[in-house]
Image 1 (cartoon, rainbow, N blue to C red):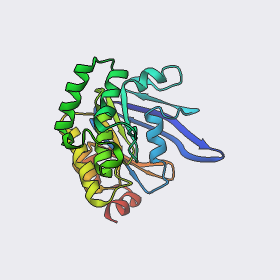
Image 2: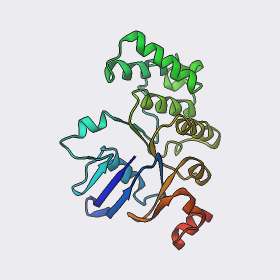
Image 3: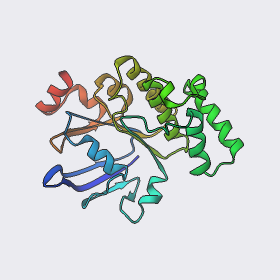
Image 4: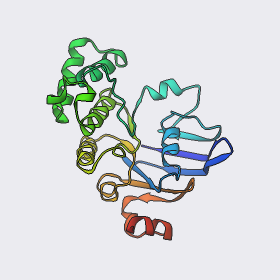
Length: 236
């Protein structure tokens, strides 16, 4: 993927939460965004995914500018997973996935069923397929959200701290699912506090503090941070 951010600033009321960020990233598969709570990570992700459109600055993702004119077309090409699962509560896991395939991808029912079964098998969710979200664990529900997000074969996936609401055992389930995405060649941008997982998964990192990108680069750079802020964050 290629990301080009120029002079991005984001204000909520009078509070500047993203402060004139400019950043170019070329030819990477997986980007991890790290930093303390409240540093602007989720805000940056929301603008990269087009959930919010900045009034100051520009963002290009894979050569395409994200703006209000092309937002619908851009969002049809990506997938987003939030901190809490966003499954439809009245539908089974299987129905959640099939609905996206038939409504968004316009697949016929038979093709949607076949692909859903394959995805449930690939991500070890077949036994949960006919249950509604309230009848499965939080980790399983979040894994199902990831599967639903990739079912449409998006060119890019965004994951906003998908383990934030989970206990350690359930966290491991979800992290393993994300590692499986990497093994399958998916391109994605994710937020995490799990440093070991970041090093296993990301090719490139972005470290933020108080709305500013302090350091970014290939993941190996985390072994020798250039700033004291990142050094403390990595070694905490």
